[in-house]
Structures are given as structure tokens and as C-alpha cells.
Length: 271
Image 1 (cartoon, one colour):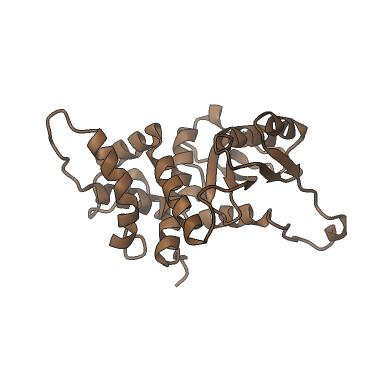
Image 2 (cartoon, rainbow, N blue to C red):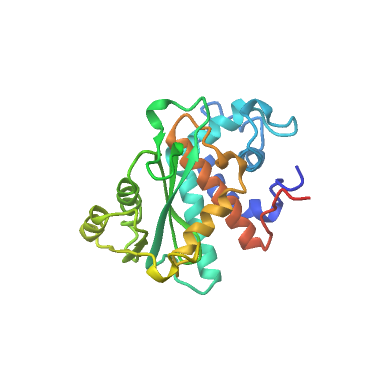
């Protein structure tokens, strides 16, 4: 587990939020728990990175029952969102930027769903013919994740745009969003209603025969989606609930962000 072990300097960035959560959720019996809370976080990150099944967590980590209990609790009460927001602001401040951005870039990615995923929460992407779910992200110009949403792959990009804009709208500094041509007028109108100027970035006609040509600023969200593919639990959607998929994405982003803050790279699986 050398590559996936949560080093002390990375845990130190996450611990304050988790410690505050523990203080707000004392056991009725006063029991502090059989497993260290840092080991629970380490297990969540390990599973996201390796893609292993719940029952295949290594013996050196807490068991499935304990890890899933905390994963579900932090998913449902937004603790994962709180950690991501805190870390994102630290990276922005370290880069000499304001805590919150003024611009976000939005995009989606289709992934196949595993056989255990309920059919009611999956579909087929019209353009890519991918049966499964779509993962939607809103990121800032540094590639830091502001919002996450997961829907059936058959959902139109408009649904993702509206859901993501709804999440970022409370951040009063955000005034502009960039989207691709898959998003339509409905998203632009919704953006206007929540005070965000949505710009549909069209592909340069001159690039039609040039293959893939990165679009200014729009490429950033593609890069973030690509980085998340280093986490094997995200390569295919294994979660019964879309909310669990969203939490998986946030924990992957948290892993990337703490490495970014401590100067450690996200390891690949080569060599």
C-alpha cells in the first residue's frame, strides 16, 4: 500500500474537519471507536485509488463495516464537500488567488456502469452510445473542483449544466461559466436567472480537420476528468446510488488536492 498510504503531512490537512465532525457526533456511550479515524480515511482513499471491492480491503485497514459507516455518514452530511472546499481554497491562496473563483468550466464524462448498478439510475449517452452514467464537473481555472453531479448517461447536458450551476451559484464571486456545444440555450437562461453568464464555446471551424485541438480554458476541465481516471473506482461506476458516485469523485479530488498542497505527485500504475 506504499503508493496509497495516507502520509502524515497529507492527513494533517484533512484531520481538522474530521476531528470537528467527531466532536459534533459523540457516541452515546462515550466510546471513541475501535479504529483510528485516520485509518478510516486511508481506507476510503485506498479503495478509490485501487478500485477494490468492499470485501477485499486489505487486513491492515479497518473492515468494510466501519469504513462504509463513515463513508456513508460523510456522504450524507456533506463532510466530503466541506473538506474539498477547504483544501481548494488553500490551493488558491497558495497560488496567490482569492479563496473563490470568478469563472468555472463545466463538462461531463460518460462511464460504463457495473452490473450491480440499478437500471433506474443508468441510461445510454446519445452521442457516445455509452451505457451507464455521466459524471459532471465544474472546475476553476486551476482545475480545482467546485461542484460534482452524477446522473444517468442518457440525461441531456442541460440537466448537468443546471445542476452544477445550482451548486456554484451560492458562491457569490462566480459570475461566468464556460461550456461546450453540448449545452444549449436552457443552460444559458438558467445561468442568467442565478446571476452567472454562461458562454457556449464553439469549436473553431479551422480546426475541423486538425483532430483534437484544446480550447482555451475549456481544456482544464478535460484535464481534471483525465486525472480522475487514475482512480480505478471511477473508471467504471460501481455505486448503487449516484450520491455515492459523487462522493467517490470528491474523495479522489481530495486525494489529488492534498498531494498538490504537499508537493507529492499522484502515482500512475506504470512500473
